Image (cartoon, rainbow, N blue to C red):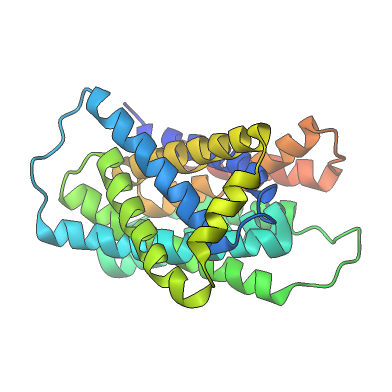
Length: 296
């Protein structure tokens, strides 16, 4: 299908915006690493349930090199990147966290040029610049509440962006060179990433697994349903769509489209009845114009 990778990237941005808003409601319950473990375990279970019903065939064996590359991508993008993402979400909220993730596209482009030898046309690079600038313009409006800048949150957001860009380029190589199904690649990355977090968290938090059990048991049925929904759309569905995008689209283009999540956050806020300024609307239209440069 023409532009299947780009379409998957836009869909991933949409569902990730929904999940980010939901995750922000749970950031006070779990630590960043605890939330990373919870969403990773549940999402892996979802993928294992779905895989037998897919029409495509899965390889009986994977080249050790490709498996190692996916494992490294999982540690960088899932273990470190997602933990930093949840830490930023807890400190600076959904808008600014997603904004900082918009720095991943130019990073992906540079990394792809250096390590993969990928080439982008001038028009595609213009799309990267316009889309990233518009996302920045939309989300980084001055705060009306006058809150002080949380530099630790910004630091975690930047770390998440760097890890995401690195993980994207690394996993793109494994998916294409190994001709691996996107869902299998997502499962390998996610399972290795969760395992890495589970091994490390014991050294940085006291009794983390007891804490996870306690927080889950204290959640009401409604809250648990919302968390499961966030995991389904934000980890299971979004990660699957991301892997499809990375397999069938240039990494920088895919990451640029995925980085439009802040624009969808604005739509969510509007549906919730929150005021959205004219500058945000103009920035959204400019970003959509930047996205269109990939298709013209």
